[in-house]
Image 1 (tube, one colour):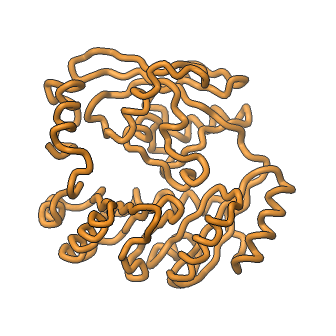
Image 2 (cartoon, one colour):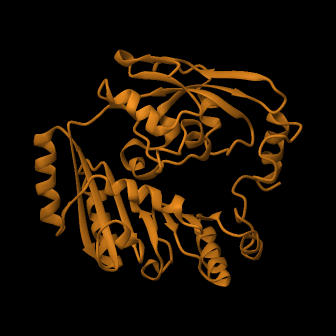
Length: 318
């Protein structure tokens, strides 16, 4: 911890600080950084921003970059830069801080981050409904549009269901947080809508970790107005329906993956191979698929921030 102002809910940390180390330091003051990309003992604060890895918490707390208010980084030519500030109301350079998000270290090496914090909730309750895949999507949609203040919402399918301590074709997981009385009322409301049971809060650690532990992982995303043409019942998957994102956890036939990717891209979505062999990526049309940002823009940004090409070479399409 470089600097900590608990009264201001702000902390400045080195980029290599693990999320477990950060959580332990903040817990003593009843605070937390509400981002959970998975495997907190290994995941670092800088890596979380650079990879834009949000995990289950994105339903309520949105993107990791929304909880970063300042940064120090080093460009490819060795230039040190600073953006943002150390108080929540300071927005100077804020866009540049957000700009590093999801760039996977290709444009700058993040060395320090100033984080916006929140209080640890008084009460946390997790629920699971063991259903089939269509019923899971239907129930998730009902809960999402209901306006109920959910903290996290996920669907797990296939062999991943057993990994989270459930049974059946699919499991719908819901997390509630807040004052104890409010969580009790909310739990009653949800049980009236969905037949479910309590599950350990640590189950969410498994949900977040599954895409990171798999030897083959594909991340799918689609427009919020639709649903992907993917038969999730046939695959182990972690799905965040409110975020229109899913992670396939088991390698599928390459032709099938190309078909899934084509279907998603035609609808304005993406299918990214986060973990796969080099041969698989080549046969599937590359790790990233069709670039969403014109390559001319990507090359111009790379030239501006890393003219020598020393940062994460080969990481992004060129």
